[in-house]
Length: 227
Image 1 (cartoon, rainbow, N blue to C red):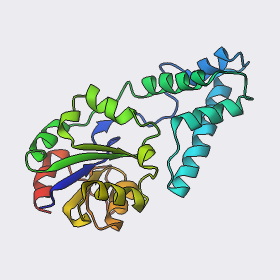
Image 2: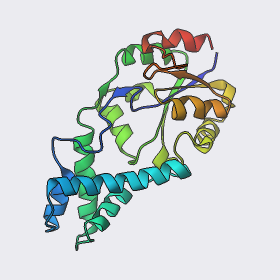
Image 3: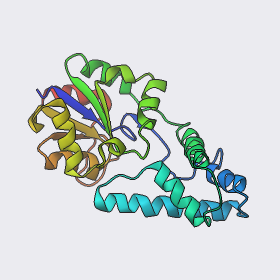
């Protein structure tokens, strides 16, 4: 029985809206208005999405993670680089993430699953994220943090899933071989093929598809113990 279980966060432990444009408060538009840029909501949305797509796509291709501050800075450039203090870019990131993460909620059966597994396994989170504080904050707010030994994020490690380097760094941090760990996630490329490429067993909890039959979190502990 592998003693370590690594969990993806978004879409695995929690439900979330993957849109880059949450509707409750338009932080990119408010940033532009504070910078005295004459821009409407549609244009602000287009430029924010462009900044996000440019940097996120480059990160996906290279495997090297980008930060929310880099995305905010690229958006600022696309607005024409109006005079702003650095703390305004930090404020944009803070306001954007506060709105984006407001609807994040625990996945069904996640607490029962974690309570069961943590009795005889070391649990950790391995998440792609553009902000180092986001996942630890959400774990605390959702009262899931007590189940986990470590939280590893792509922005802190520098590499993002499915690049093999992030999995090797995580295994090295615990000083274990790949066969002593399993990975659980909802993204086939990042959470199944990525860890399998370094020799880890992986369990898929995402949407069903051809050759992709998901495991329910409620049944996961028994399957991990049988791995």
